[in-house]
Length: 224
Image (cartoon, rainbow, N blue to C red):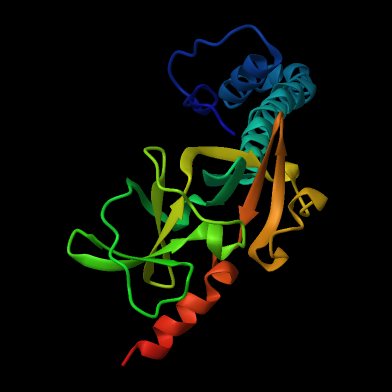
């Protein structure tokens, strides 16, 4: 790294601090006019230049290290949208969630699987609503004022997930995610990709691709 002050021209007035580096530049500037001064001044700049450059290299490393650490910290978190089924909190990748809406009128569909609550009209688009609680074998969602429909998009397919209540969007450190403990063994383990253990709470992480595999496959079979 070269600072502009070090590139002063060899002629004209020179204004530099009294240091080894300044002595070096003065010696180079006057080398052609006063050769007798050169032997006395030439050896002095060498250690001074090394000392001036060394801290600059150290400073670059000093400032870049925190940036690398911050980048690693950002990469070591996962963004989740969380919701409740009963008293348990569940989380899905927030990138899959399109929106969370209040429960509106749900139209039942004849001969639909029992976990399909029906369909809703979402701004002119008809989407199926899955009772996620029944899908996981945990009973039925009793629709209340706290109930919500989590609209997710998987493989270009919109599906509504009926849940007991929405929680929040948060960052979870990947280091807190572990395999599912015995507390959640009553749920089909293929639907779970891990559990985030936070202070005072557990968040069960769902694999929606596996949980909704049947619905996605049926949609693909019905496609022309």
